[in-house]
Image 1 (tube, rainbow, N blue to C red):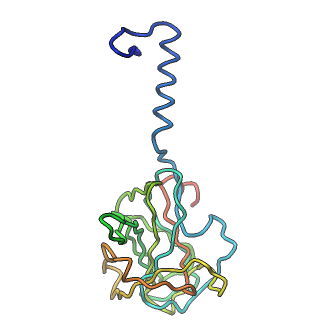
Image 2 (image 1 turned 30 degrees about the vertical axis):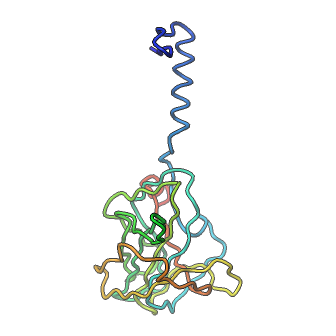
Image 3 (image 1 turned 135 degrees about the vertical axis):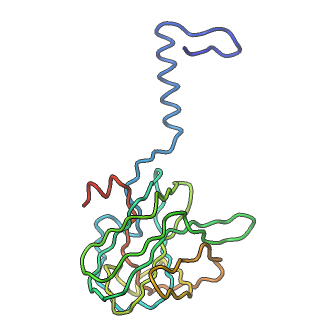
Length: 211
């Protein structure tokens, strides 16, 4: 029963129902929705995709558009266009942290995944858990391609790009090696011509509907 302010009793009848409905509506509007389907540097049907081999072995971080709601990611997906036995793509999501005047990328918990490159086609891998991403944070997708013989669907590499890819020198000897838990922004380089793998992190619902 809706209570009147300052201890003046309770609303009754039709006013009580209206007030309670308005209270619920206001509460729902103030909460972030947990209904985001996916996140990627590219649109769902990107027209600027191509197949690329020749990836150099370093970490590359690409800016991801800001979310409107909360994403509970459970799977990651990419398309292998040229398979290479024993090769892999490691990927994760980094959150930009600017606390205490320092800028660094912090790995989102449970977002790291290894996608094998042994077979061509769309590959979908389950994350170790549920990686939760929020609309108020700024995220970057990180990818490491283990072999320059492995081909993956990628953003077109042209001289027209105006937003660089941030790169970081790091070598992973195997698919079980872990990506860094954090990276200082000052240690990264800006490369306008670097390839960007088309990797999608998606929710359970997106995976069910789009598989």
